[in-house]
Length: 331
Ligand code: C2E
Ligand code: CA
Ligand code: CA
Image 1: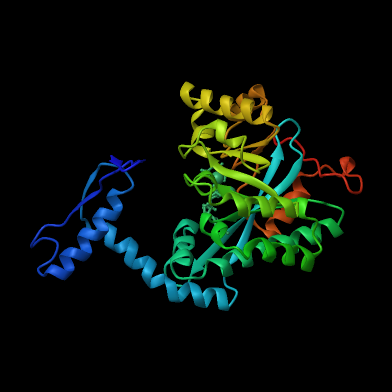
Image 2 (image 1 turned 120 degrees about the vertical axis):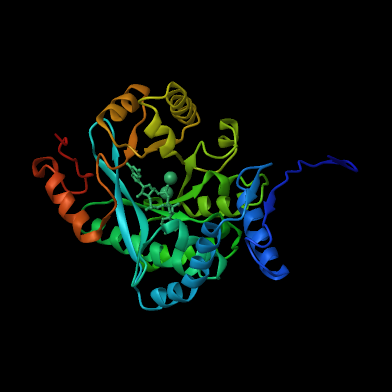
């Protein structure tokens, strides 16, 4: 569509609600058609008929808002840690911090759900700060125990629009006495490149602090590899859908190969996420990917179990003070 001098890409999303099946009054029908139209936006040009599952997810999320606030107040949210290891010799290089919430009646709530609730109810900065604090606290403890591990924390795209965020990160690094290069912030590809240059000033300020920046879920958005070069980032995480597919799908293998090769040429570190099998590990090694993360090495674990995992995996003879722990090859 041409609009004066502007060319606009226009997508349509159609939601449908049917009287009387989906409501007997106009207000209910409009509310439900809105939910259906929102769901339709996930696939440009699609038409979505209302169904009760759409309502239950959004209602559940609404119902969770108060519970999430209470959980944050009472310190009920937990942080789990998943190891990142070098693929060649399985040295532990760091951990990713992943938030966990066990709801008293609903049970485990998926992080995608409570992060969305936090985003929509003004609680995102509290959630992010909780995870950052926990990660930095553990990083400080590991450094004191001569295990200088880096910690990675997930940042929502929305946080990049908060101008105070870089200052907050600097204050927290100071408070915990953790060197900035030991903190990695993971931001999804869609958040780093939202189609505008908007997030870039915040990314620059974070990079100038000395913090490492990682593009998460790479390959799922529509940005090209060429974009990567312009971004102030240090690391790329290949989305787990490609990593999981590479052993059976030549297309996925080609994508992982391209991302790894080009990222390395740009001087970026590459992490393969979702490494679940030895076969995938071998393919990644052939391609030259250096770092991996996945169930093959460990699931995300609470701190105490991660410590036990370190203990079981680390070959004591290879530890010298200050060196990164080396993992014994998993049989
Ligand atoms: P992510 O950043 O891509 O995190 C990796 C997800 O992959 C985690 O799911 C992890 O449990 C899972 N995973 C790791 N290895 C494997 C594997 O080998 N196979 C499979 N199938 N899955 C694997 P989780 O913990 O459910 O987190 C889901 C998403 O929620 C994260 O995706 C991240 O985007 C978001 N998230 C989690 N914690 C936070 C947080 O503190 N803040 C924000 N903003 N987002 C968070
Ligand atoms: Ca991540
Ligand atoms: Ca990811």
